[in-house]
Length: 270
Image (cartoon, rainbow, N blue to C red; front, side, top):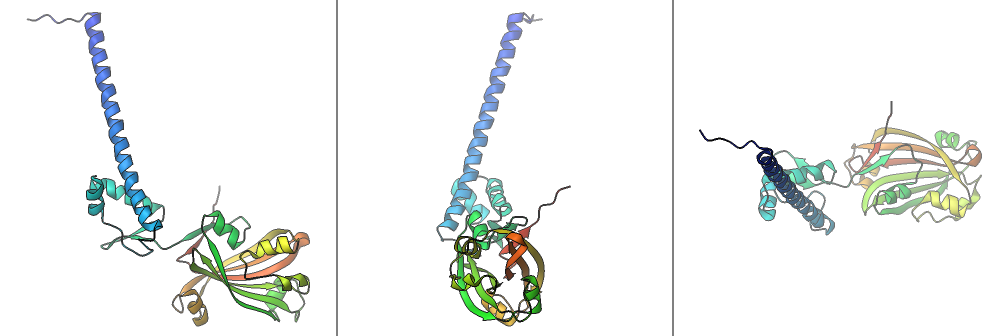
């Protein structure tokens, strides 16, 4: 029977061999994972380049998992995981039995910060836009007069605007301003983007707080036409009263949002 060498040198050599082999196995594993992640990222960069260049537009179908796997020489699982990640980020949407498509623009606005529409959209990296539809002085409804702390019959300035994000219609805004209290409001250019900026920079007033109410309504025929939705479609309905110093209201606004393009986020803690 062959006598085995169990000397310290033999054991040390074996241990070193195992460690070296294990180390190379780990290195090889990490190399393969890095290659896999690089391919994974290549797929996502490719899809994003198609979207950012305008080649793929919202609603367009993207290449299939099989096509992407062949193009980047990866497994379908790797291609699928790359797409799932983009779906979770809201850039793509999967439709059962149909494939994966470029998602429509959806803005997520956290509630809790007092920002104008323009400020919020810019902070999210998008381009805000505005179209002035109406500018006139009117007698306010009882709700508007009460919200602005005006006596009934006191005229207000009514401003109606369509708001855009990346040139897509997002909302219909109807604002009322107490011109008896702030006559300088009549001299402002409401075709510009930010009403808050106009109030603070042109009038020298500091906006300090707002009360906001959120509900849902059905689109009327005129609202549906402006927002390019079907009559009776559900819309997000926001009412906001904005105050300057000394609890003085400076604006009452009603906003109708397309819910397929705009959503509000409320973060709760316990």
